[in-house]
Image (cartoon, rainbow, N blue to C red; front, side, top):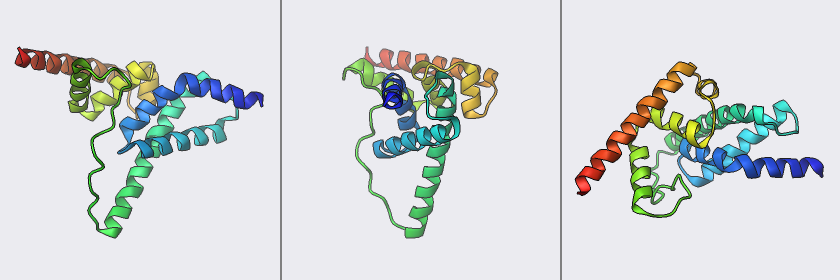
Length: 168
């Protein structure tokens, strides 16, 4: 039972960050939950039954890989069935923040960024990863991760500033 309590505490601390990243990597909330669970099980099977902070980067990598696998699976099924999938409604909010104008503006601006910038910003700010861990997770150099972070923040600032000017 001690292991169950250890996992519960670990998931309570890191779960929201991991879920945020899984949401970003998938098409819907249910897929994000599946991807997160698969990534945790994959990591657990290969690295023992005790959660450790140093496994966090590996879990992010596994989330990304599981999301890619799931997306490929969905695409193959869609192609086989040759059907049109109806929209699933409004996009899932990435943040669990107050529903105000600033939060909505941030969500819109972040969603408008190119994926390579958005991914690094999410891993850095909400995933609390270092550039080295981000580089390993995304299979890029840590310098590339740092520059994507910097350029992404500049683009985000610029977009938010231009939206603020247009509202005046």
